[in-house]
Image (cartoon, rainbow, N blue to C red; front, side):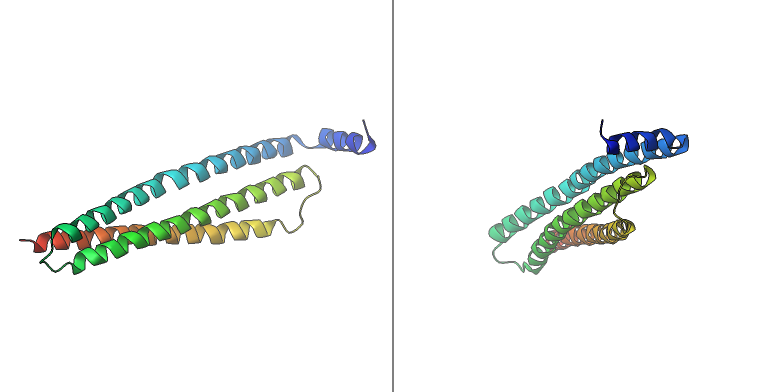
Length: 162
């Protein structure tokens, strides 16, 4: 065992029990953040993407089948469903970065608590995480609103068929 390993072992032995408990909780938090990242990107996004894609397909069918009717609402439905898709993809990207910064922050906090070498300005990761979380929430909201407006446009078109 080298000199550094012996020093590290001594430091770990001297580590307070509450620090060990705190580190265990932080490690559990990292694992939980990884699961949340996966789940969050899968559920909401799959629904918006699937339903918006279906809305675009339905709108395209309306364009094809109804030739002599004003199709402005169908056009706007396609636009809003497309916006929902694109914005939803952006929310997946920002969600990914938010969770990665959360993991980086937590791992550096563990290193600091263990008295190991750590990035001194690691708290900036928490700021980045917060910015990406806000963007993700905003994009999800815009995506949801765009999807709802697309549905309303389709319903207005159907209502005007009578």
